[in-house]
Image (tube, rainbow, N blue to C red; front, side, top):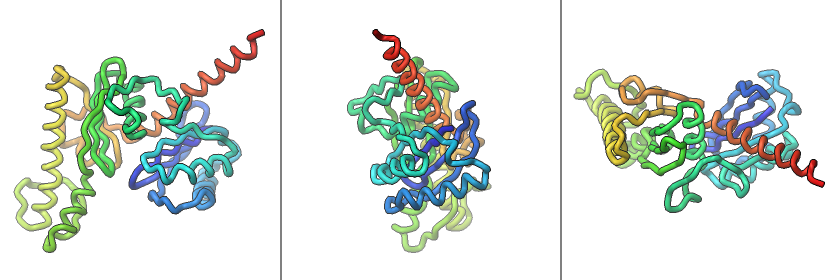
Length: 271
């Protein structure tokens, strides 16, 4: 079985896939760069046992991280508790199967590339992928699945927290769809500004990307923890896919594993 690890700025998501590609379990931890491999190991193996998953049945792992400080502990977790060397998205030799057509490919977040690969595998292209996470990212891929770049905006919760911290009289509020655009009190006004402001930003950026690409019908896929709040309010979003990143990690591992098996077989038959 495969252990897939998606290490983001806010949460680290762990998932186990069986050999058929079915998810056997998924767990989240807050991103803490001080957490050791042993702390991760005790926490994760206990949760796996609750789902009747024996850690010894996990024989492969893959990691995508946008927080470099977590990589060492996550690598050691895979080696010490699952006896395997993980693939790391972005590491030399890991084949993603796409062209990254930007000025500095090494700067593109691993999660954005994984999302692009996963979305193209499932929906084809061209696509615009919106990931509602710590940041709200817009990523564009062409009809061949190549990554073209995109846009990055502050995440919804990040904007709410900044508003609360910078303005003495504005409280901390939770995200939600307001019943009306015109708020009748401070909290309602804040919720309206954040929610409908983000709706307007999303619609505007998608329209501009479509115009720049010369294609007004590019399909839009949403993912990330907060995507459910917006999908029903933005008709141009055609798909909401919360498991996009994890499924992308599964696809990348399968691609590289198949290549390794083929290379080993070729080497074995070479005189």
